[in-house]
Image (cartoon, rainbow, N blue to C red; front, side, top):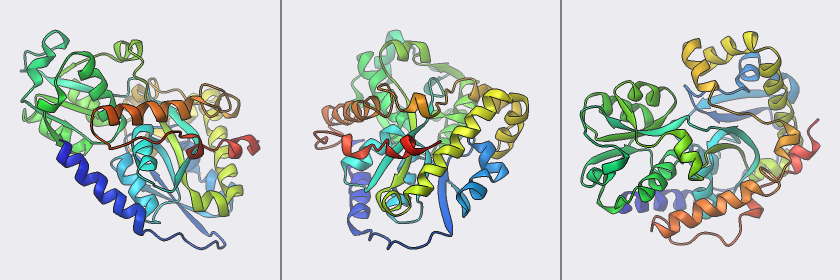
Length: 330
C-alpha cells in the first residue's frame, strides 16, 4: 500500500511542480468539479443555472471520481473550483504543494461514507484483525481512506498487513458485489449498494464518538482566487441561496437535486438526510472557517505522517484556508 501511495504522491507532486499559472484575463467560462451520485444543496443552482446568471459567465460542471482527481485537475489548470472535494485529498494536496485553497465548507458528510464487510465474511469489530492479509479496496488519499485507517487503528488492526487496492468507488462496488473483497470502503451510491450485501465495520455514530469527522470543502485555485475574487464571492452567495431554498422548499428542491446527481429521488433523499449544509454565519465560526478547518487539516496530515503515508506534514495550514470571500458574501 505504501508503494502505491508513494507513486501517487510522486505523480501529483510532479503535477504541482510543472503546472504553470494562467495569466489574469477576463473570465468567460468557469469549470467546476463535482461528484455524481453525491446530492448537494447547490445542485439546485447547478440545474437551474443560478450560478451562470449571477456570476455572468458560463459554468461547466465536470464530474470526477475522487477528490484526488479534482486536485490534479485544478493544478493542471483544467478546473477553477471544486465543489465537495474531500478534506483529506485537499490536505494531502496542499501538503505536497498544490496551489489551491479552501474558501468554504461544502457539506458535513456524517455517515455518507464508510467501510462494509462482505456478507460471507465472519468478520466484525470484535475480530477485525482477521482482515489482515485480506483484500480491502478504497480510493486512496480520500476522506474514506482516512476514516478506514482511523477505524482500523482503533480496532487494533495492523494496517501494514492489509492487501489494500486503490480503486474508484464504482469499481469497488462491482468487485464487492462479485465477492472479490473482504471489505470495501466507499461513499454515495456504491456504499448504499454494498450495504445491501454486508455490514458496516463501525457505524457512523461509533466513528463520531471516536472523533472521526468527515466533511467536504469548496476549493479554488490560488490564481483564480487572486484574479477573480468577486466571482468566488458570488459563487458562495449563490451556494447559500441554494441551501436556504432546500431548507424552505424541500419538496421543490429535492427532485431537482436528485436529477442533477443522477439518482432516483428516494436514493438522493437518503443521502441528503445524512448531510448538513451551512450558510455564511455558520461558515464564519470557530468550528469551521475561523479555526476548525485549519486544525482538522493539520490533524489529518499529522495522522498520515504518523502512519508513514507522507513524509512530513506542514507546520500550519492557516494559509490554505481563506474566509475573506465568505465575509464579503451577502
